[in-house]
Length: 227
Image (tube, rainbow, N blue to C red; front, side):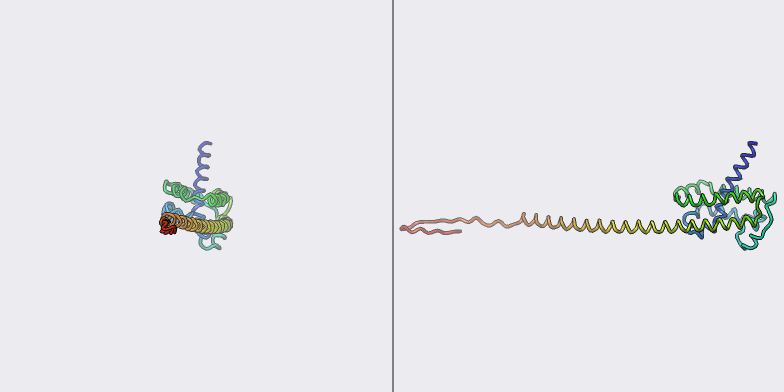
């Protein structure tokens, strides 16, 4: 019983990792390229995806081409395909949880975007599990998956617009603040210039010579000279 629980946990973990690959096209459409295209993870995923050993599930499971053909597919995963899906998702899990990929997510993370992505693929995980368990056909899997993708696109585009508006608001506020600070600095500089000029003017004011008056009397007549 303990082994079954362990295997189930592993299935869920690898499915979670695989959803990142499934969502890659809609991530691009949502404008989340800079955020979700982890440069340390994608090369690893590309090598995994292009591996010839997964050719048997490439058309039914990995392909995102030809919507009609995908939607009309009434088959379900065979035992062999289930094994390949498990192997593929185990590889995806290793790519996603590498030291480099984990470090990139931490350094480039955004809480709101994380919440959008997590909530979107959480509902998608349930669909992948249903396919893995044979509860839905490949066609039903792709139809519902595309609907999930459209919902993710809408939420992602909305978030991108919120980010754009917020960045514009912050930039405008910063510009206004810089203009105000510049005006205050110019006014302060002008005040200092005037006070300095007045100080110099007082310091170098020429001193008027002292005025003296001398008087003398001669024969009863007094005369004064002012110098």
